[in-house]
Length: 224
Image (tube, rainbow, N blue to C red; front, side):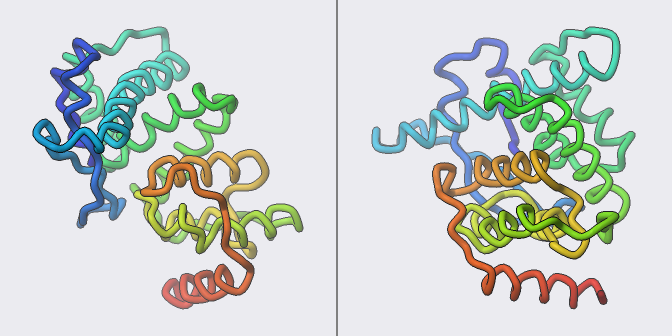
C-alpha cells in the first residue's frame, strides 16, 4: 500500500516529498505493496526518488476525484476525507487499500499521459475483478499478431520484473491465449506497470522465449 501521509496532501509541497517508495510483501488480495519510509535525513542524491513519491501522492488524490466525478455526480474529495472514500471503495469491492490506491493512481496517470479515461476504466474493471473476486479471469479470444508481439516484449522485461503490480495480474492481462487487455488497453496496463516499477523509464526489452516460459508457468499454476 502507498501508505501516504494523508495530512500532507492538504498542503502539497515539501511535506510529502520526504517520502519515497520501496518494494515490500503484502499478503492480502493483490500481493503488492507500495510502502513508504521517511527520507528526511537521506543524502541529496535521493531527490529524484523522493520527488516521484510526492508525485504519486498528488496523483492518488487527483485520481480519486477523476474517478468519482466521472462515475457519479461531480464531487470534490479532499485530503481530509480521502481515507474514508478509499475505505468505502475497498469495502464495497472486497479490495485492499493497496488495490484501491493502484486504481486511483491509474486515473491520474491516464490523464497525464494522453490516454482516454476509458483505458483507466477498463484497467479498474479488470484489476478490481481479478483482485476482489476471481484471479482466474481469462479473455474471450486469443491475441492478434500485434498484441502477441507486444506481450512478448513486455513480459519478462525489466519493467515487468520490478513492477509493483501483481505479476499474475499482468500475465493474465497479456496471456496470448486469453488476454484480458488488448490494443490501447494493453499499452496502458504495460505503461502503468512500468510507472509503478523500479525502472519507470525502461524499454520493453524482453523476447518471445522469456515470455513463453513465464506464460507456461502461469498456466501450469492455474491448471490450464
